[in-house]
Amino acid sequence: MSERPTGVTILAILMILYGILTLVGGFLIGIAGAVPFIGISVTVFIYVIWGIIYIIGGLGLFSLRDWARILAIIINVLGLIGGIILTITIVSALIGIPMIIISIIIIWYLTKEDVKAYFT
Image (cartoon, rainbow, N blue to C red; front, side, top):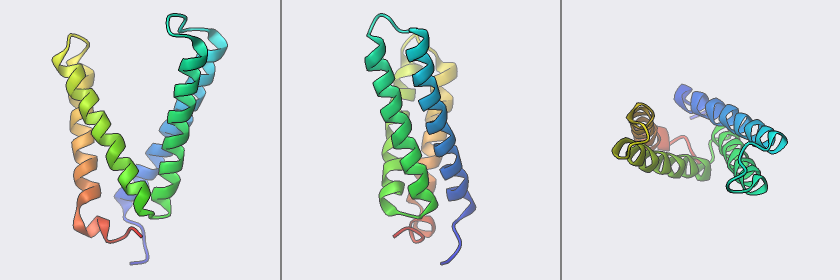
């Protein structure tokens, strides 16, 4: 199995892009001072760590590392939980339902035997 599945490549690119956007968002929050109620430094720290995790996970998926596949599954389980919470609370089902659907699709895809076989 020499070539990476297209779905894994797409997911890796999306994870890296999301990680970069999260890093940029964290730094912009820090510069703008947009989150005074919990502390700017805590918010920036969370954004930076989350962005780094996504970038490392995306790079790992490009390399077909099994730890990156597991990390992506964990991230999407968290996304699934977050989507459920958003949907059942008054926050927004418009955000929660797509999160649930996307997370389920990614978890399903990364746990398929033919996809798992590519990872080392």
